[in-house]
Amino acid sequence: MEKVRLSKTKFGNVDFTMHLTVLALVAIGLVMVYSASSYIAAINYKDSTHYLKTQLLSAVIGFAALFFMMNFDYHKIKKYLKPTVIVTIVLLIVVLFFHGKDETSRWIPLGPFNLQPSEIAKYVLVAVLAFLLEKNKGNDSGFIKGILLYALVGGFFAGLIYLGKNLSTTLIVVMVTLVLLFAAGRKMRYFIIMLALVAAVGTFGILAPGAEYRMNRITSFMNPWADASGTGYQVTQSFMAFGSGGLFGVGLGNSRQKCLYLPEPQNDFIFAIIAEEFGLLGCVILISLYFLLLYRGALAAIRAKDSFGCFLATGIITVIGLQCVINMAVVTGTMPVTGVTLPFISYGGSSLIINMASMGVLLNITRQNNKAL
Image: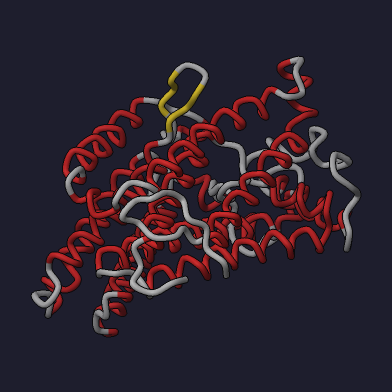
């Protein structure tokens, strides 16, 4: 693949394939946010472009963040890690005072925007774990030094996010921690212990008092048609979107499910609208773009010039990959409904900006690789 020289700096060439894939996903996201939201925006705000304008502004900020991080030496992240962690923890605590749907605490209202601290926390945790794994390399044998230290760090972030009743992001944080420990070569028996603990904590999170809505989602997942007008409503409407789309879809802008059938179609269930308007073919193309992005990210991790870059890249692509899998699994009814956005596609300023900034970090890692991509 031909490389593109960005500037005469100490950095090398950007991974053009990865860069172009990110741009393509963001462009698709903007088109689909408008298509999915235009009907309800026209009704609620008398402006069919209401959601598009906000997402477009977020995309502009996201591009600026991507370009900045792409030209910012990722090694300098270590220098700013401590204050970044402190700010992130403060935000995770502050958000607990703002309650939304189902008494969840996910967003801090900032005028026309809503800040979602958990989006920041996922990548801050990745940076912290990458730093610790590099720092303790060679002095990490045994369960306490090799596993427990990192599990406590990941568990601390997961606990703060869980307090906001955000079980889906809590799961992602836990899984990212386990993936990074696996990438660091920890012994398999330790993972069995950790997975048992995760399963126990996850079960408690589902059965805990005050979390009845989670159990309702699970029972609905088993048979969404049993209560198609209640707990199974979103999933059954999503099924209808997939069924209507067929092989080639009904065409851009022609979705029926976005017309007050599928709640907030521009958010977590936007993949269903893509399936309806572009059919199986459109879904395959989108999934292929994600696979390409994750493949290039995996190459970046393998060929990173140091262990910090390797763990950082691994964590970033793991976060993106998990969000894709969970979102698509929910929309297709293969796992219980949970609030995870589709990266670069779903409506949401915090998610888009933070994800694009993380891609900037990943691109910077590729620019410093020892081997050409």
